[in-house]
Image 1 (cartoon, one colour):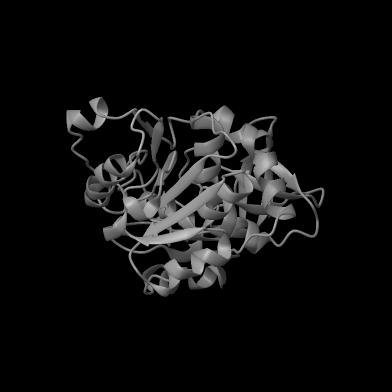
Image 2 (cartoon, one colour):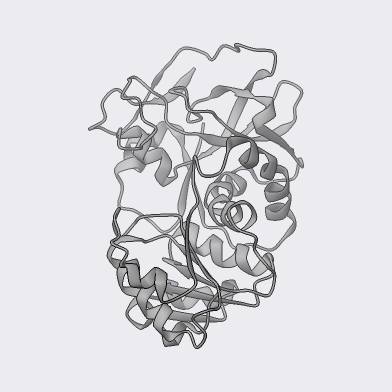
Length: 310
């Protein structure tokens, strides 16, 4: 078979021949891959910088996708930590880490949507006791995951959703996706209103400015504020002054691989897949032949999610 193969952490994957997958247990099966998304998690695994990377090469990148099994069923699947990823013509999956999809689902759209949607979905469904009617702010709302977070929060019952990011046409476009207001990062605080939950895809310097601004703008500091750290596009580290924790009822929570057990992630797959296929979502996807992986990998970053189609 052919696959995207990484032989050096300093070079993009190359389209090359690779050995066919082999099942190793009673719950495994081989699927023909129809679509596999190029997520940030995939890039970091392919360049050896992800915290789960074991440094071994060669590897096939990709940790999720949509495929068709031998019985003709369409499946969305998540792979365990493995060097034999989803950016290949075929892959061995654990059926217990997959969900059967309706036949009329667009594999490219679902492969593009599941990963970015999962970040906000798991944060609100598994990391906190999210109450419908809460006010939500998405910090870093113009990225793929942030745009999905705005829509997820709205569909899960948020009373209001604020999108915060650098000023751009993409920030303004969040109003059509379900945001009640949009604010520039420099204006986070009074302009954001009295939020209850923050989904933070930035961290670092952006959060260092936004968090105290939100805290001091709240009329009742005794009202709970839950700040969920999901991404770190603006920096890996944050200094937390003790006053932030003493002067307000602030809870800092992380959401990601490890903080959400695998069993909980797998348990949410059917509900999330059904939710994405039965509700109106705006999903930006660019289908790309897997044979063009090296070119697509190094092309200027787009706001659309690249989805490889073997």
